[in-house]
Amino acid sequence: MNAMRVAIAGATGAVGRTMLGILQERDFPVDELTLLASERTAGTRLRFRDREHTVGVLSPEALEGADLALASCGSAIAQTWVPQAAEAGTICVDNSSAFRMEPWAELVIPEVNPEALERGAKVYAVPNCTIITALMALAPLHRAAGLRAVSLSSYQSVSGAGGKGVRELTEQVEKLHGMEDDLANPDPAALPVGEVFGKTIAYNVVAKIDVFDEETGFTFEEIKVQREGRRILSMPSLDIWATCVRVPVPVGHSVSLHATFRQPLSVIEARELLSRAEGVQLRDDPANDVYPSPLEAAGIDDVLVGRIRQPEGREDELLLFA
Image (cartoon, rainbow, N blue to C red; front, side, top):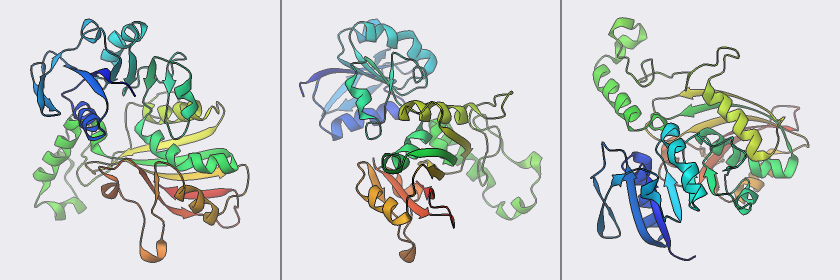
């Protein structure tokens, strides 16, 4: 690959800094690097390959000449510059939800629908974090037996709400330290309620991510899972239903999956398929207490999959945890 002129929009945020670290870790061929953020954090200095770079103010003009732009700056801001940059010839990879359902953008999980990378698009949308985890586990099985329906529950870490979510969990744990016995019969007025999650997240779970759709009762996070899953798999009528839950875990999303297939698929066959799947690590050895957990998955690229079971008498159904 030829060296590229790379820009990172939202470079000072947690995801932007991670993007920068991955470029260095993987020795990505960067010829010229432009780091951009809001006026509030512009001027920050970040190190890349033994050189400090000053973060500039994000604007369409600041991206002129970039071959590749990696964006993690939120939907509203991405909409102000991504289409213009793409029109000028920059390949844009956007981490927000702004363009996931746009017909001119590709919604891609490389291990699941790599054909989307060959269509010559200029905008590539990163899917919702929960559907990535789910489809990394399901796609190898879908290719073998044909997916018919999926029901899932997510266990999403507070980092999904950004650094402010992690801080809110930490602050609430500190406030409740020494009060653990009182939580068996808590005084609601004494519980810390932050601005991020709406309810106490420490020692609790919150069965609401994003806002509710008044008509259906689903949250928009759950609606995203359905819509994006259907698009990525090119299955517009796939039955896919989600309950998305925030849990007091710093890093690492998990999903519990109940999948129905068009053909019978055994636990043994599923294990074999997943053991050979790119981007997946099989962690499924009940006899030795081996199964996935968020802390084990933190900091690695692969999706951990385990707890593979089959309901009695249901040869076309499997239960998994990823």
